[in-house]
Image (cartoon, rainbow, N blue to C red; front, side):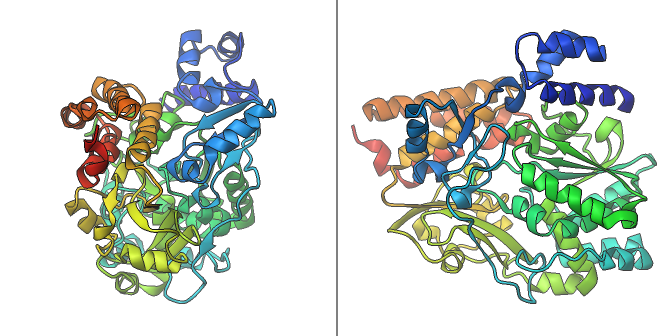
Length: 503
């Protein structure tokens, strides 16, 4: 199975070398690899960086960038005769409006955002010096796997990628599998609109993440680790390569492979990411079985988010109780991304469970009169400002019908039309649905068409089937995308109904 996957991975590499799906490329790659031409085309057509190649500027049309003038940037570039493409969130929300060039390098624009100044009560400490000593890994090996898992359990560390699943349960599950061939995978495919924390960890503290990954591999009994990095994060890939080289013999027991993504938000879903590493279309798998049982090539696989792994070295160095005490309503400190209408968009490491007001205070205050916010990116929908005092944590937001997710907080002021804001989020989900599940594939389009019709005539009857379609999508989708894709429109209608009622 892994050998077949290796051949498929070569297909992706060759497609990238040939500049994506240009005329004749699929046949050429098929001849070079022996993979059927239809399979080559099927893979290439799935990923936007391969299916829509070209020497062009890609401008982000995520909500934060739209609010910062992305549409005007696109119009100006086109007026100058440049080839330009509007794309989904580029993970540069603190520098909105963001754009990348034909080589996928960030085009300098707005200055980078703020971060929390270095101090002692931080688990990751983005402003601190990256430590290449791997002292926490040495301590972990001395103490043993059971001690490590117990410290993670005591710490209360929840997955920082979105679901908030207890980290120690995953680690224990993989370690106790009967199958001895196991893998570790780092999910660095950061794509949730409003989220850009993993990018900065890889750029500023790559050793901390790699050390956490090495500890995970040692506990899991894995000799191979994959880091799946979003293809647009070329600077992160270079930073990781440099850190791995600097680590040298400290990591010579672990085979580390960096896998570059090719443009697909859905690959942030854990099983879709596994499919992508295997060289296939990044479509989510049915669960169960879960990756801890049958992951890469059917083998037990421990997968964690960048931030989750970056927390591990400090937890083991200072103890699980220390990390747990950092939180406010739930355990630990948390990297909160904040963008939109605030003074200093950026990444702030604060106690898990702070309120929006506390976060915004760290980010330089509100710009204009605040109206709404998304606590966890597009997938969390919108909340009104009368909920600004609620804790930004996993449990509390779930009770509100929202989610913390990856903590991509976006603030909207009263200049924003909520129907227009909802439309941009629905466009995102329509673009990024993988198309595997009919309820999601069709439903995303229907919801976007509904808000378009409403905006054309401001006729409330255009939105008469939104809830019914949302139910169908939630009930009939394999993965979380279809389950949350209607939430921006639903929540905007729920909390800002007056903007949807008038003719």
